[in-house]
Image (cartoon, rainbow, N blue to C red):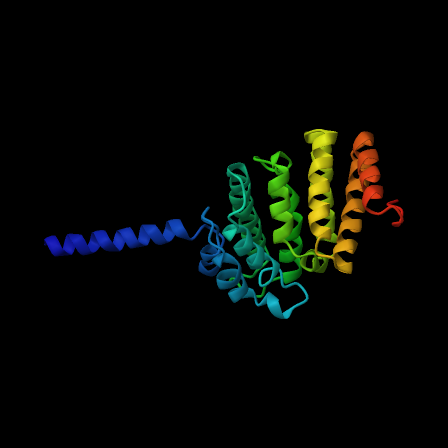
Length: 244
């Protein structure tokens, strides 16, 4: 009788556990790609990409940019204590957003994914994740330079207008959530490190990021930030194209 009760107990435990793990309205494949708050990067390739196959489409974020920079940022030892806090919560936030996007843009089997929408939603989440506490705008100049060195300009450029717009919005926001001087410090550090690549694409990325930052400042009616960004842009590109 003892063995029988034990067997029933094990069965009920397994049944209950399965019910908890698979949230209502989503498949087991989708549930397996829910985030758990850890820093593992396996979600991208070994879960979402395995189900979606976005690498073979024009929207390969879950096979390329997502896992690449999850791993690069996660292994970077050059961040300060605050920088590490920012990095960790940002990586978790980005994974949470791409997981949610995958679940809402795949079918009942967790496959037949809309890779375009998954990528678009993942890119659009960067400013939110960067600016949530502790904010990108709180980082030191050293942390900003470390961050900029991690990212290859060509990869940002490959994300298209959406990725460049997100970066512009992040930089601009620091001018009014912190101060004009802190905004200048952060933007100068980011720009100078990016231009250290010495490539044409790096210059294109920086010019477009400046353009998007100025536009966002104007949209937010932050005149002082708009003027400061334009002035800083002219320091780096005295003969560059106009930003308007």
